[in-house]
Amino acid sequence: MKGALNGTYASSERSYLYSPYVNFSGVTAPTAITFAIWYETEKTPTIAWYGINVQFSTNLGANWTIIGTPADLNWYTDTSISSLSGPGWSGSSGQYLIVYHTLPAAVNSQPYVRFRFYFTSDPSINRDGVAIDDFSVQVIPFNQVPLCATSVTVSSTNPPVISWVKNPAESALLPLGYNIYFGSTPIPTNLLINVTKTSFTLDLLGPGNPYYVRIVPFGYGGNVAQSSK
Image 1 (tube, rainbow, N blue to C red):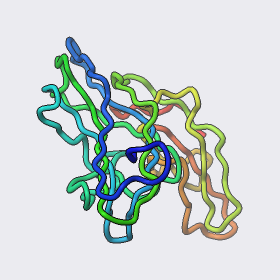
Image 2: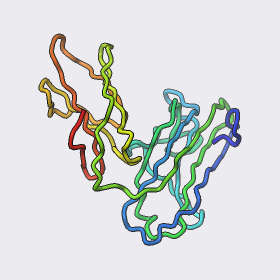
Image 3: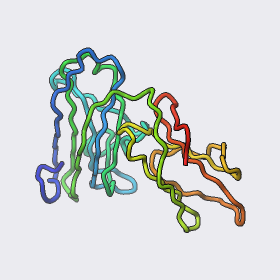
Image 4: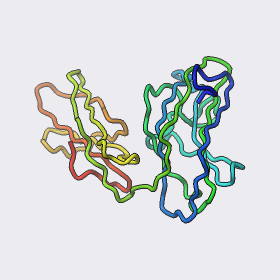
């Protein structure tokens, strides 16, 4: 989003990207939106200057409500973006990120639900902007167990970085994240951390001792993979 296909976004830009109307008539099950986003906007260590968020309307655009907060899993980067006067994504993602968020019950049974992305900038320091792809609305797979991660690798650096790949056969809405178990036994049961990305750095390892890591994807309602890498 920058008001043009090439170049940087404009100074003091206000851009909107709208979805078609979505008919939620008869929908009672929980739903979510998911899409890919790549953002390159101005952000310093202390201030998020420019950015973008996503909103919805149920009354033909008369009123718009921001979806989510930075406290939500796999969602906004900042609580307050200067040009937006609200939460959103800001800075540099460096690549497309797959994000998702549950939708409020207010959209259920509504015949004219519309979504929009709202991007803003201020008068100086313009960058590439924001790209959005693969936007969809889906019913949340509450009863679906996420698939195991694949291609687990350990770097030769100190401290080591553990990396893995989301299962290519996985749903766009799964997994919500990964529970990382760590210990000195082949099937560790000590939960070290849970993450939403597909890598983490394993600090504070003692020399000369074998350690084991178990990566377990988790889904909605606490559903976890039956096996792990």
